[in-house]
Length: 310
Length: 272
Image (cartoon, rainbow over all chains, first blue to last red):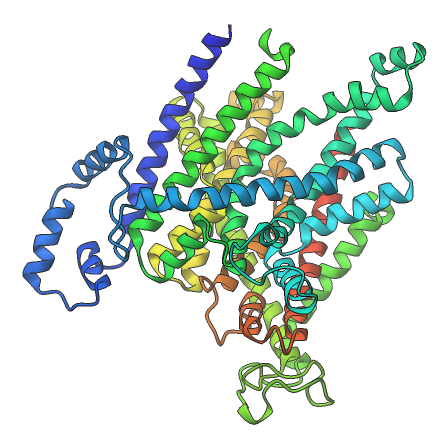
């Protein structure tokens, strides 16, 4: 069963990946002007007509668009995203070099979100209508309405400038992750508070909980070892969906905190007009989103035996 | 709609949204000064009678810039929403109504577009076209229509199977009439709810990309631009950070309250 599902699921992913590659490819053709000229100008020299013509040939720009796409696809299969105009290094290795920082930040953000959402979500499900429930609602609403970039600047001001508890920028020591992770985590917390509350409320109303209570199990044990497990599992799917917004959010937050991840790299590339980096970045982000969703699906299948029967 | 009266959240949201709308509309009368007037001799002044919120690094009136910023943000958000609908409504209608291969092709495109983190794809399109507000709007429309079209399609699919549509087909109505008069009209409400839920997100994203320098360009009075303008003065003039952030947050909160409230009402209406 599992093998068949796996093959089916991978079969669904391939056309999406092809589509992603096509859109990323077409992005390059949105740039005003000739990519060959832009690339030569990035070196800071006034290019001659011959130099432009030569570069067009080396970049393959003299060929038709379908031909160019095919050769780009072949390139992609070899994990080659081209050479950065500004650094002269392969885009893939530049991205890979910065990826751990972004992954670390995403992990930190998730941990921060859970630290906020778990107690509030559980508390508001156990005591609906209480002050805790109202606090949970308030924080969930604030979390959805707060501009992350603004929260980041505020945390930077209070945490780093005023109280000097954390470094102002960059990635120096373990403390430097606290502010950017908290900023991103606060934005995500709201949705988890609601989800955990709703799911836990639903689970607590189910028969197995009544049975456990009738059996005389202590309440904390019913919650922690039965209801909570079933309530938290659906947030895994959300995690897949949230990867996209987490990666999107990290672009702005990384630039605010000068966090040396791929988001900041992309923003720097935008202002350096390093179009090939932007193209590679967009492509990789979409691939990551697709892959994370695939992995989340499979993990769910392993964790929840009920899904395997379908 | 009687539920609105009993729903505290929607009412608060509507008041906020209405207030912002009025501020945007009457900006020239409300603003105490010209938002673009540079006065280097008055730079970074503290609040006073002539400048209620003080002045920024170029001696411009902060309150006036905030007030005109309301105009910029609301106008751009509405423009994005309008262009998103201009694409997603016809596409969703056609996909849902036509079905078959056309539907399949459209859905594949939507799947691919939705695989991209929307903010990142918008960012990239703007970067390729060159950072400016019109290009930002274009990039938003090009990316955000996909999610809407998918929802509209599913609404259309639900409506299409109803008896009155079959009756309209049997009585010989043209496809155009059926799509617009029977389906679109009944889909209008869920579409509006969807829009109200997402207005806040769009506003937030526009200000965010403007903050990065990809949207509104200085000296345009826009909240994201004001935030990034005040960043270098964070240590000495942190109050300049506060105003645009609060303006954005309350606006988004207002839209979210209305959107959430409408969505809950729809849920209740369905359950009833």
